[in-house]
Length: 398
View 1 (spheres, rainbow, N blue to C red):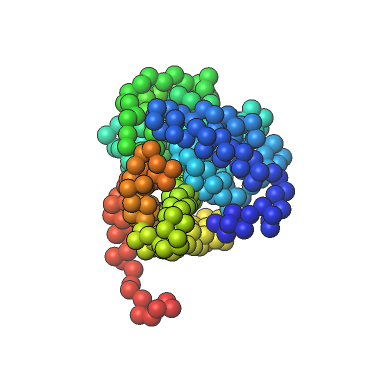
View 2 (tube, rainbow, N blue to C red; view 1 turned 90 degrees about the vertical axis):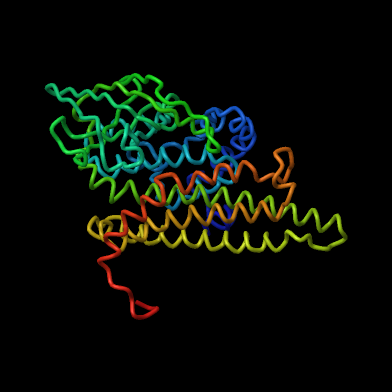
């Protein structure tokens, strides 16, 4: 997060990404209350993201994008997270799907043309990895791809699919074929003309209300070449997991930063009102501020680790890296919740009220989704097997 903290005056905004982010963040902030209150898609913010051409920034220049690295993507997630968590999460999910296509299409002509169109038209991609009775187990698919010559069809019960009705395309997991194991999966890109959606489960939640994560029955058809060449097992480990955990963690860090900023303003306001005497909540602000620095450092360190290994598939699949990136998600999600709670206690009743300029209620409701997005218990349980096989270090430097 250090580049964002230093600001655009220190680091040249060569491609206009930071200034574009500022414009989108301003639009997101203006409508965040209504998005949350009405549990509606953030139309205005996403329209601004399209207008300022933020949706295709990760795509290489030769295909019409800006070739922005993950380090730039997480800055956008962080900045948007400070003002509207739903907008930030939608942007993050969209970028995760683009990363999967970029890193695993192996030069596929269909996918390259699709990415060119995405940049030209600023298409928004949704993700469908949650299905039926499997819930959040994204490494298991019930619905198989049906093949007939060069054509494919898919009938899928997606119990949670963020902004599916608003998206211009869906990137979905599926079982490779009817006789394949549930874990033998592929990833497919369908554009809006390829599918129909039938509402399945509504989205009336505590927080992240603007992601519009309704469940749908997906009826899709297309060409076999729309399936990414790499197996989903490879995509999941080398790209889906690190990009998801780093972008999501940046969104949660942004939510926490927004809450700490409001707590800071409250403490300053209270001190001015009392002739310079700090209110009792100042101690909680100190905790929140210090913890936010820790959280930013945690995400930044994990980002550096990924950037060093991002072209080394074997290293990305290693127990060490997979443990690091998964624990980053767990720690970031738990710490973000703790920070917002500390900000709430710093503001006291003013933070607890919905109608206060120092309210952190929306931040708290949104950030409480963090530990249950790919549930932390599931992650830690899955890591237990490999951790049990690893020795405990004898030295603090090992």
